[in-house]
Structures are given as structure tokens and as C-alpha cells.
Image (cartoon, rainbow, N blue to C red):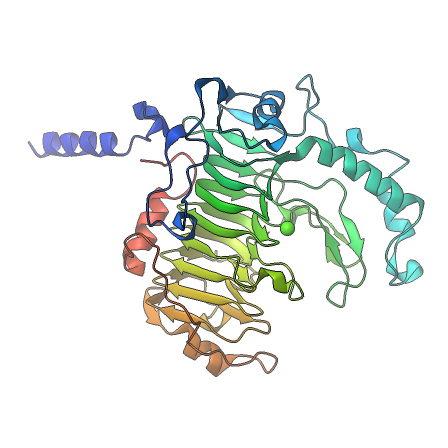
Length: 430
Ligand code: CA
């Protein structure tokens, strides 16, 4: 009897846990629910829901995806990705590796020899190897940069849709939905050496998994973003710096506004999410309004997110720093004129990462936080930041000058932590 009861319960559980696509529901015409974060502001976000039948595409390779994206046109369109699409492919669908893009005599060994700081100094790289690097990088960009235009919905079909090696770029476009997609490894074959970054110099990479630039009304939901395939920690060190291959997972810059990122998973990456990329870009004032809710940030080194200028509502997110995270830096980055309203987020960290390590401020002045859980215990991130911050950081005040009005039900951090562990990421839309 007991066995039968358990069997019935498990059967019921199985039914409840079947992803929407597997149940035959078409998520392609879903729109952002009213009130669900900043992307619901004003006209809301409907993506390609108005598409006629001729503009509903199922694509299985890069060529089909590029055709469906239509050069970033604003024609209403729904694009469904089936299976795995590799952006690093030629028009025949054959894989391209870094050597296939290299041109003009570019060779990494030659590049390293040419711009070694011990002989080249601290000037920006110039000359034949840098020119060859740029020409080679342009060849890769031509394949992997995929423009997403206004009135577009891009969704994964079923539970295993993968887009690898691509950088989706929503540039000066409005009304875009990206859902149920595993977007991985926007790998830069040709990082550039920047001698004047951060004192030691650094390798700069070109591609974000998703880049919103001048984009408005964007809903990113149940997306998984990661470096899967090429973890940066496995990359070598050149010029005493990690030869990074990836930039952001989801960067939101250059006047982008009204964005909701929900139920997504950011994993195994250095710089997860940059909202506002320059203190000097004062035209971002009043923009960069973003809602982040029910997302998982797991094995992320920094920027979850780092914010300039924007009113950013960060609620019910799950942060997990693994025990072997020796390069961990911070989660919430409070930069120039940012107004982060953080509530009911849960942080799980190993012993060497303390509550004072969760927030970092550069030139920021305020942070609202409430309902924060740190390894299961309530903490006040603001009080801890102000008590333990290093001399280079100002104290932060609690008044960020706004109170979020557009949001779904806000759960306790504890309940959200468990719900996000079960439900965030691609392949998990119910
Ligand atoms: Ca970026």
C-alpha cells in the first residue's frame, strides 16, 4: 500500500515536472506577463507574438538561423532553435576553428613575441601582428555575431536547444524575447592585449553571450549562459594574466532600458553581467532599468551584476560560490550612480568567502538590501559593507531613491533559493 502510494505520488510529480514543450505547448507566442519587471513598463514586451505564419521558423543550423534573423530586421518573427547550433561553421555547416579564421600571418606565438611587455613596453599593440589579429577577428565576428532585431522571439524547442559559440546582439532594437535556450561559449579566438588595464594589463575579449546595446523591452527567461566547452580557468597565462576567452554572459549597455531577466542560470564564468559600461556615459542616466528575479548565479567570479546609473531590482536570486572558487571576487557591484534594490536573495559560499565579500563598490553611493540570507542566516549586507569595507570604498546609504513597482510575487529568500535551484535555466519552462 505504501509502495503504491509512493508510486502514485512519483507519477504525479513526473507529470508536474514535464517541461512545457514536452507537453506540446507552444511557448513561441508567449508574451511577458503584465507587471513582470521593468520590461513590462509602457508597451510591455511581446517579441514576435504578432508574426504571421510565414515568419515562424524552426531552425537547425547556423545558416537557417541567420536566414530567420533576417539581418536584424524588425518584421515580427518567431524563431525556434531545434537541437544544437554551432555558430562557428561555414555556409556548408562545416565547423570552423580558430586556425580557419587566422589570416594575414597571425600566429599567437608571434603576437606574444611582438607585444611582450618586457620588450614592447606599455604602448597599445600596433604593427603587423596586431593588424593580422584584427583581420582574423573580423573573420570570426562575421560568423558568430548574430543580430537580433525588433519584434523577435527566439526560443529553444524542447529541453535541449543549444546555441554555442555565438554572440547574440540586440542593437538599437525594441521588443525582443529570448527564452528556453542554452547559450554557451562565446569564445574569442583572438583576444587583444591591453597593456594599460588595471595596472598589470589584461587580455580583452570581444564577445558576450547576449549583448543588449541600445536595446529596449527585452525579456530573457529560462536561458542558461555559461562557458561550457572552454572554461577560462583552463586557459594558459600570458604576460602574467589569464588568457581570457570570454567577455560577459549578458551585458546591458549604451542606453539599453526596460529589461527583465528571469529564471535564468549564469554559470562557470568570470564576468557575468555588466549593466552600464562607462562612468563617462552620462547619457545612460535614467536608463538601464533592469529587473533580475529568480536567476541562479553559480560559479561566477564577479558582476552578478555590476551596475552603473540604472535602477536595478534584484530579487529572489540564488547565488552559489563553490568551495573551490579561489578566484571569486564579488556578487553585487555598486558603481557610479547605480540604484540597486536588492531583496530576498540567498547566498551560499564556502568559509573563505564572507558576507563582506558579497558587495563591492566603486564610486557608488547607495544600495538597498533587505531579506538577504547568507549561508542560511539573515544578514544586513549594507551594515556589513560599511563596517568592513576597505579604505578605498565609501560607505553606502540605504536610500536608492526609488521603490520597485513592477514585479511578480516576491518570495522569501529561502523559498526562492529552492525554487530557483529546481526551475531556473533552459529546458525548465513549466
Ligand atoms: Ca561585454
